[in-house]
Length: 301
Picture 1 (cartoon, rainbow, N blue to C red):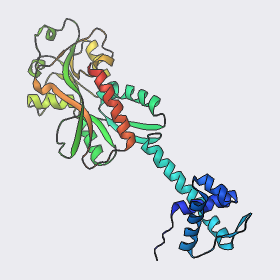
Picture 2: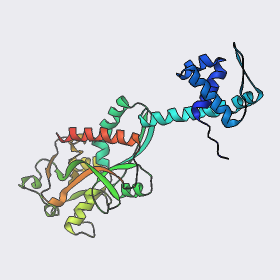
Picture 3: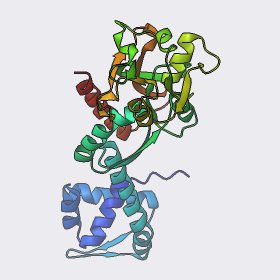
């Protein structure tokens, strides 16, 4: 037989036990005494047991009432704690979220987003996983991250994309380098000089290779670099020119280095929020995304 026990009736029972009075219990529950009495009677009817002995001055638990009290106090407290916990998640008073991010986004968009969230949602616990674009898509498909700040590249038919910023790739060079004399710079122009490129897997390297139809590294590629800061340092030493996204240049140790955007349309990319089409984003994720969009809008001004 299916039971039809209501939480409100159980709570009325516990308030009656705690206060020793239907009148005081009704006040705690915020209802009239007749309504409170009806809740107790409904519970007794469902259980087919008498829970209280009542007189004009006091109430006392029956043996069945004592057993019910002992059995439900902890479960009701756990249920209420679980409900409060869910309320906190919904209101983003607490929560965990694992976010994937491109290295360029980690340098520019993620730090101010985290700083703002610490002020607005101090209970939020974000974890940032930095990786190249293809790796981020793999992490999304295997549920290692809830969403990613990534470029709109490659096979993303199973993904949703919310744009954040438009970016372009640039050639970074020291003062006086011949590439600086070009009115505009294309991918092909770079092949005449010693190159510092980000390693395969990066969106910069992917777009470079695809634009030039390369299946092997160019002959003048002397440095295959993982970190953009390392690329900048090598260029400072006069060891080559680098191809880097424009987005992080303002926070890299550029010093006196100069840069020019590449003129090819294939040197453009759009960075945004990427997540699986069938993924329901948590309130914590939506709070992070909302803040990231504000930071991105400020970056583009």
